[in-house]
Length: 297
Image (tube, rainbow, N blue to C red; front, side, top):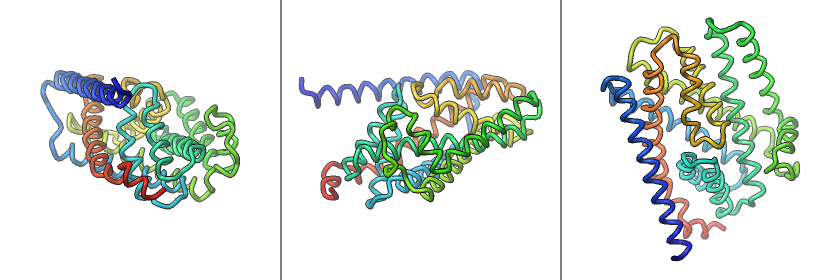
């Protein structure tokens, strides 16, 4: 059996596992809401919001790479998104950096740019935590102050000097030279794309949750999902932060809706996200075909 055949079998098995996982999640969400589903309109709006967020993130990625063929790199980013559902957080990262390398970007630059993008997305998500602290009036005052202080402290990473300091303490970028770190304007643009990404997906969750009843405090929902998304994103070994993200949501929103409904809304949003990611990957895949990548290197 050749290596290519083994790879194809592994990919096929992975797709089957992912599909089975989502079918089970849909069944559980269906049971939790007694068969009540979000309308097609709400699913569409949520999907469009997530799609807009992904396009913003793709822009941040191409800005950090700072090279030509930006459409190719943006397409590679969108194609690599499906890899985040694999355990360990390795498939997406290796795919993204590998496709960038195939388009002429050195591995060291690709790894550094990917790490900077991840950090700016975390900082972007943490910025929305200020909204959570303001809207979460039932929380302990000390916890709310701690959230704000933490969010403000993370903003330091937007400064290139602190970004360089942080990269030199991360194992995979410890040996990166100063010249590999993107310029300050690129870091600021990537941070802005991260703020937009997290804000868009948080509003998408609000749209899903509102399918099951009136939402009295929409800013709390947006802030809660932003925090849940950021924590799930930072938890690299957990595929797409599944489970952890829902636990954070339940912990913050438990007095607003039953836990089963909070989780079900998250599952329905994930389904909309997966559909959008699949569509964008399919649309973009022709730009990252090996034959096309060889033409630009």
